[in-house]
Length: 158
Image (spheres, helix red, strand yellow):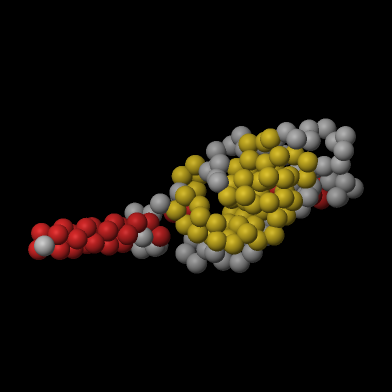
């Protein structure tokens, strides 16, 4: 009986230790091992196509119109390291490229050092040429200068 009780206590202690260890990556403390961060995501498109089935890592971020945005998707877990971002092109019937699955061609890597203290939002910006950029802010991110130029150059289509 005492052996069973000791075994149970050891098991509970190990379980408690394991659950606390898994929380180490969640904080922004110096010296802790971080595995990722939870941020609100705002996406902006500088593409002349609608994008559907937008998948950032394993999170579905929805849809957006040509030169549009998704709105804020709250509480998205973002692991540190290389990111995966893909979407499917959509648009009116007959638009070239509809149904094409696009994966970013550039390497999008997010590290703790890139993220300023107080950051609550990540802006994901989709550009022509199947590339993307991430920006960080404490409030809803703005469109990038590069993106604003693309939109102004295409004002007759927007």
